[in-house]
Length: 301
Image: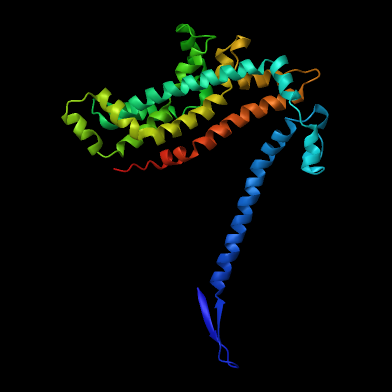
């Protein structure tokens, strides 16, 4: 709001901000400063990790960090790929990276199929006990993962999946959150999307494949990103199931490098950490628009 003030000397009009407008302007400034400080707090560790992953071991623990000691074009001269070479050649990080990609991609594809079918059934089909079964699935989201490790391990041993990648790929597909997310998305779909197909005698599987999946790309992308971060960063389940070192994923490999008690290779640890962190960030940045659309659940009829 603005106030119009008339001066007595010259009779001119002066537009002045009201006290409320002043307070609003100060509030916005404080919010911007707070957001910038919060962003810097999150970005600084990542910037430090990016910088030190390319520096020699003697510069890793410099205080302040080497990047702040001189102009960037001066400090960048010490950059090299020696840390990554050490990690890949001495600790076989490349094999762990391949294992992580294989497990994550396979588990995501299986999760999308299983959860999409389950979400379709709970949202659009009517069968006895539908709500009760869905309630039980939701209840599993409240159980801590660590309480399920013992029965999980027992089932994997009985099925003959111990010390195999399938032993961690298949259980990831049973995502209660994925079923809930897709079920809520499908409920909001307009009925006109399926009425024509049903009238033509299309089966439920055909309706799901040709009609539901094409309009579900945003929510499927959301679930894929969520599962990617969960599976990629998972440490407990692969540690429990995978005993063979050639099957280890990146989190286990990182722990193995860090567990060395004598002459610890911090340069290899930092290089491996950078690889483990940067890939999920890149994936999220590539699909962030689909992620937001899937969370909002907006469907245009």
